[in-house]
Image (tube, rainbow, N blue to C red):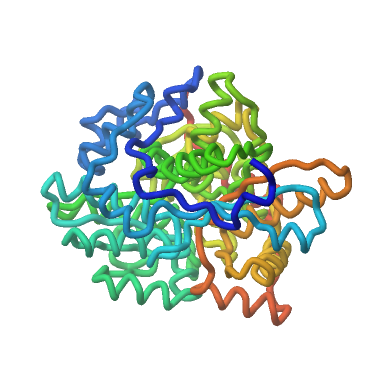
Length: 457
């Protein structure tokens, strides 16, 4: 198809929406290491996990051989409210950069939650409802996941208890209020409501919190509340499975117009956005059908892939959750209060960690001010105010496009724009006023986190 026939926005018909989630682990020759029960230090079984997670989600979490899971019709019906989401050709950004590169982004911000998180939120809430549960507990960083889960629970009539990382609770009050509007209870974490929260506050007076802290509190609440289970917005295999709908739609749209990406870029905190976007493309690479270059982009303030260790670690600060082998900074590492709250997690998805360890994808870290500079440039030409998290991917996509300008190569770049920044205006205010700062942890800071890694044989 000729260049001028590719539209600005490629919309699929709802009948072209995927009917199944894709499990990239099925095509991995070397599978991610099993999660470990901290009580027995042995691989966790379904029986170990079912007191914490919904039964169907446990099944999805532990299955690394089934390539496709059918999406229930009730979930697909909900998806039709905002899916399929558009694949956008960034013609204006290309012109601004004067690059021969072709830039595309999959935009996941066109729903009430403002991000991709709703894709997994409705799935997890649905399975909780099917199990006959009263409600669910969760954590949220910047608030996108908490907002999405609150909306999904309201739709299905489930109670929703959210522990929001304290610095984000204070930085993003409007996202907090959206959750409350949907009927969720929202508690700043670490709180004084749980044993874990009280312990963390005692050990780290005045702490701004972390996703690891909030996870611990949410899990504790689920375990001590009858009829509740814990659900997570990233990191877990089941979440990457649900988010594969992003990549599946993207690939369908690109195949429709004969577009083949050379470079695929996503921001990386726990891995839901990146894992969802790259899954079907990575599957082709694993099967030897086509090669792609994948780049994970993380904040320099929380560099789990670029400076972390590949080791078994607790998924939460309170050490309640199972251990996962992942690139980690240590469960006790509490990152600075940067504005990309959704990327302030000490570790990385075990699936993505294994792919990275095998050399199947790259990783970069970026400082906050450079990320916001790219976000502002993007907003001015593409008309979307991006979330701080997604702006990490924008920064590297622009860098790669400028490299093409230098070399004259006409590469095709794809990145995930998985959230809007309209509730992140405090961050933009700091950038615009010149008061935003950068923080990069020292080797000594990281060493303190590594010192707490558990000994696993």
